[in-house]
Length: 75
Image 1: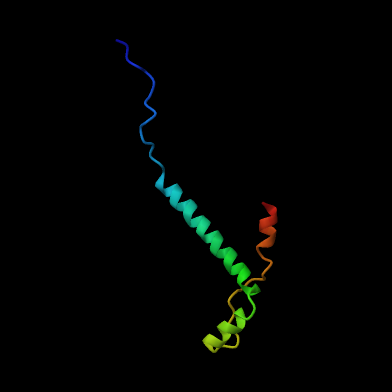
Image 2: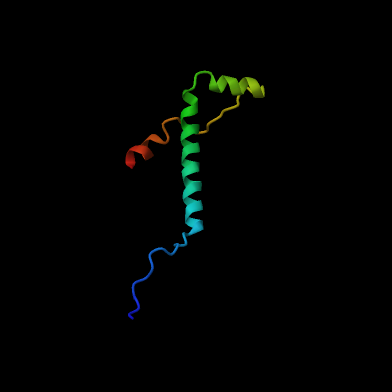
């Protein structure tokens, strides 16, 4: 009888959990950043939040709406 020296391919492979979580968090962060970037395009968005808070100087975003466009075109 001969013993096979090839490894069994059916064994489960441990995936690095830290890497999966990091990728998930990065993807979620980029999606949320993209949503914040396009929300000023919604008509009445700034006025809605100013009326809800009662503060005339309230702003949702602190950067121009075109801030992420160069990053998108760079990729």
